[in-house]
Amino acid sequence: MLRRDFIKSASASGIAASVPYAPGQTPSSTPAKRAEAPGMIYRELGKTGERVSAIGLGGAHIGGGSDAQAKISLVRSAVDHGITFLDNCWDYSDGLAEVRMGQALRDGYRQKVFLMTKMDGRTKDAYNKQLEQSLGRLQTDMIDLVQFHEVIRMEDPDRIFAPGGALEAAVAAREAGKIRYIGFTGHKDPAVHLRMLEMAEKHNFHFDTVQMPINVMDAHFRSFTHQVMPVALKQGIGILAMKTFGSSFILDSKTVEPIDALHYGLTQPVSVVITGIDSPKILDQALNAAKTFKPLSESQVASLLAKTKDAASEGKYELFKTSSHFDGTAANPKWLG
Image 1 (cartoon, rainbow, N blue to C red):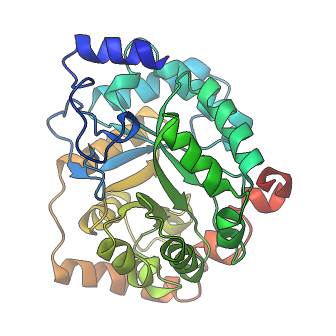
Image 2 (image 1 turned 60 degrees about the horizontal axis):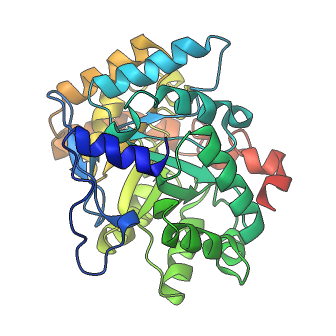
């Protein structure tokens, strides 16, 4: 959807697409107003002024399987039930995840959601090429949030912030109205996230979001919850929780049930819990978690963590921290540029 069509459609549906901009804001950074559905939880996204669903639709599963229409229908069903935060990435299923999500966002669905995707490129040139491909696949000329993907090496922040690095491309894309907000993701070690935040402070740059593993095992091993989340909260950065189930590995430990794992994530001071949804059954599970959610008490949290402590102690079920199982850029270093 082109921006002119988006604005026209948004105006027709009562979305404030033409409100005056606040001091210091640009058209690309003005928060949008989206309908909110009963039964879904909505939260502020850091200091952006955006309100998004506390359950986010993970994009990695959208590109899988041969039934494209089923995945397109799944995305639309999620949006129809109040999920407004959509996750994706330039490299998921070689771009097929973005293609299918772009098809799902036709017919007026684009203006109903907060659309996020991620770039692997560490250089300005690689980032720009990937961004243009993502814009085309997603059938939009503006993506709400673009994050630097898989910041998992200590040198990644240096490459991103270097002259001619990806940050230069991201800032220019934001100024051009191609993207609205900038964040980063990673799943390997809290030290890398902290270095990224230190580099941002050194360069007088503020990230809008940060995505990291927050789950019932993270508290016991290389904990993003304990080490990174307090820093992000202090800086007003919107926190996006991922790896709730660690693919299926955390559930395979038989220490926690899916609904409890989701409720644990939602209890944390995060904006969004992004969860992989690959079928109507799993969508119903996520929607039910939102409908039944009540913040867990300290004793309930302590009980869950006690159940997972032994299994979590060495990262056996958090393979994204202890192996290359989840490291797409390790297997494809050319994506980094």
